[in-house]
Image (cartoon, one colour):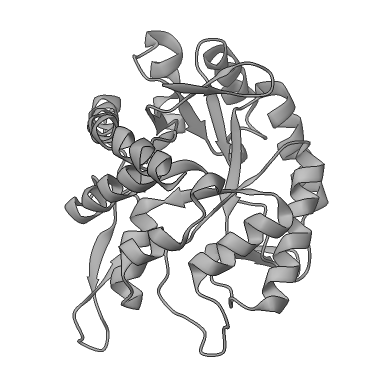
Length: 295
């Protein structure tokens, strides 16, 4: 099952894996049976050898680009130089999707190496709409915004996260990256119903799913544990259950197996992708039937 881009390239709805630098030589040489790969452009922009291998890989695989340094939530504005560098890579690779985080990570020219939370209110929404429009204009293509993993909230915010994302997509014309594991993590940490969150998302705006592992840490207040989105383990059973619900409600989308720390061998990532394909294969027809019924 595939959709098509404007340029006519097929967009895979099967699961792909994150292409991290330790696997780059293996993928370039062995050409494993993977439908597509997702990269962080920041790993390649200043690495000519990695960029050369990526261009070779791109000849045989669709590529998705997931930015980690654009910081669309920063009050100080976007880093135009970094946006230009990402645009140059995007023009060379021609990915089928480009995405990034609903977060901020820079202040006064300093990169904080973390994805920090935002208050969900009209002031923040207006800022995000401007920045997303700047990113889309700068890249010359749509941008997908990913829901974060949450650990704290703001008392005076006026919207839920799902409402905020839906309105951001409506006003800016962006699409959404539904990180299923982040919803599972945030639902536990912030005590909300993960399925109700999914129900509040605009299904037509969702262009990709992410699945990744997390770790449990003891709450400093002694009140249970906290789920920490580390991308260092296999996907949790609760996240798989939520993914089954998401696909059954929304339908199949390109799904990424995201693993960044304590990286396993490529075969382990491919096995996780295969599991996602089995779930999507069972759930997508139910979603299609539901949408037809609503019509």
